Length: 102
Image 1 (cartoon, helix red, strand yellow):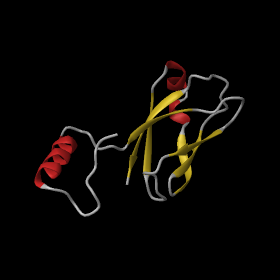
Image 2: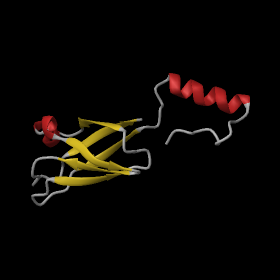
Image 3: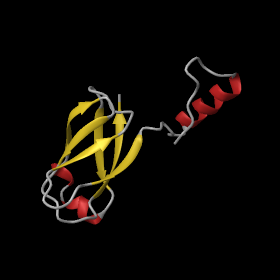
Image 4: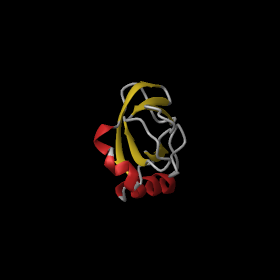
């Protein structure tokens, strides 16, 4: 996890470090998920950064995931959780990287 600032800011050095990290693409809003197996068509994604209006994008991180990458989406989002909808999964290696925006 990338460092963040205290709720009421930080000293000049802390702010500079965080801004430099953001400019280098370290925005601390990514993760990975492996889909549930056994014929499941949903998997719960838990991430404290998810909110009701967040946009969640998925990128396949395994060959098995790539085959179904057009049929995965998030719904039912709430504070810290989302339901990931996908095709029935019998392969234990369907792993995706994701990014949460907003």
